[in-house]
Amino acid sequence: MRGMKIPFNKPYMTGKELWYIAQAHANGHLAGDGSFTKKCSDWLERRTGTYKALLTHSCTAALEMAAILADIQPGDEVIMPSYTFVSTANAFLLRGGVPVFVDIRPDTLNIDEARIEAAVTEKTKAIVPVHYAGVGCEMDSIMAIARKHGLLVIEDAAQGIMASHQGRPLGSIGHLGALSFHETKNIISGEGGALLINDRALAERAEIIREKGTNRSKFFRGQVDKYTWVDLGSSYLPSELIAAFLWAQMEEADAITRRRLDIWANYHQWFAGLEKAGRIRRPLMPRECGHNAHMYYLLLPSLEHRTAFIERLRSDQINTVFHYTPLHSSPYGQRLGRVAGNMANTDSVSERLVRLPMWLGLEEEQPHIIRKMLSLIDALD
Ligand SMILES: *Cc1c(COP(=O)(O)O)cnc(C)c1O
Figure 1: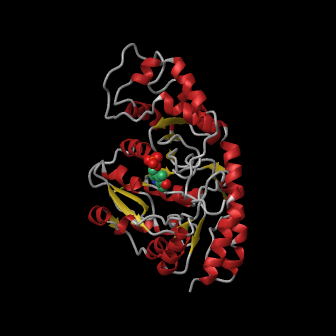
Figure 2: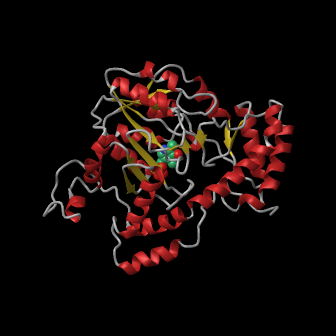
């Protein structure tokens, strides 16, 4: 409705969340790994085809578990894009690892697989591809480089639930994959995440790390007669209340994705003319990527254009946001990371990208938003 503030994000509730939380409450099992956690991890295993899915309290936590599983030691290098969220790097820094930043491709804005091998040294332990906007990285090339150099591949699939690359669900292709259910993502539980374990050899240790370094999960399955401290670990499991909320979302995951894809397609269609006229660039979807409409963005010609675009929309009560100060140019990344090659695409995209409002319920507002944006871009120069 005109005059109403249009937020950038608005968490979608299916309507069953509180009902399931009430059930968890009635069950009297509030700690992690109860029946709702099992429903959610079974669903993830079925839908992604991963060997084992473990719920965590965030994608950040899943990445931290992955860093422990990768056995990162001080000085070990981990290759990743600079154009990503801080957790991709922090998870490895916490173990003394060194993030090595590689530039992104100008089309998908994913790590440029052709530049990864030049960044590999004797210290390299892992590659962390980030599937930006739920569009899959070039996983075949990345897995081939990893095999050749004996590296682990940990997919940061925080934005990738319900999306695929060559028919394979994101997060299920590398050795490990990390998903996010943060309220800004497609399927949510406020804060939440999951670690997908595709390499069976890592599954037993993953359970232990998630349970504070104990073999408690084995004990509950009756595989040992008492549980004890056996490894490094922390508390990475979410409570049943969170899993109950998440289950309501998972039940609706197909419908949620369909509605997001419609909103995405609407933007995409309306901005086609401006792209043809060379005034903006729209997201690019390679044929082999089944995306999930996590995000709709535009690439404007310059930082000045973007600043004007965001400010003028804000005065019209429409909130758009930009994304990612590149990690290699942020204070902490400069101190502790290493840059491999030039970062021209990362620098350019981070100055020009703007994310448009994307949430279920936006459908009614979308014609108004798009009209405003079209006339604004026409007037920018
Ligand atoms: C959201 C996000 C994360 C962090 O997810 P949390 O669940 O909030 O910890 C990590 N990486 C990427 C690429 C993200 O978009």
